[in-house]
Image (cartoon, each protein chain N blue to C red):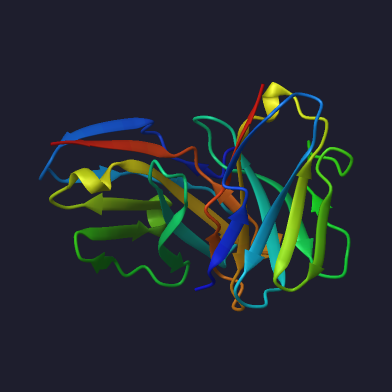
Length: 114
Length: 115
């Protein structure tokens, strides 16, 4: 399975600011995913990021609010822009294995917006 | 409509008791995959098992076992002789071929094992 790291692991930010979360994988992967998990809730897919193409956003998520970069096959970033307290969540990146059957998750970034 | 339903929001058991976490899914795809993940308080999602739609054999891994029944669209997870370290939120998930293997997560079951 892939080993995934995320930075930062947690942060406390002021409303109106932006935070960029990094996701690094120890092997090359085609598909990377970004999820949000609001307190006490399940995971919600924000977007799918393929290397070399624009990210595909799920309903309710827009690029202006959550811009994503995917510069190569081992790295991606998610920016949470113009943050409000409602953005306080755990943000997780995941990767799909080459068989396309399983997803492995990073440790998550715990974001608190004050 | 919710594709994955975990009706049990919270469960508490005393250590060494057995506990079953329920998962019911909905799909029209003939090729799909079912998963269980564990999320301890640290927040990281830990992959536990994957099952494909063509394999209804039950699986046992140590104290963990899974019962997959297509007839009832269920994929239940049993922990035998529970331990305090089993305390976590457990998520069931579905991945369908027709939707490019997008994952649909249930709402999770929070398990507390009381020493």
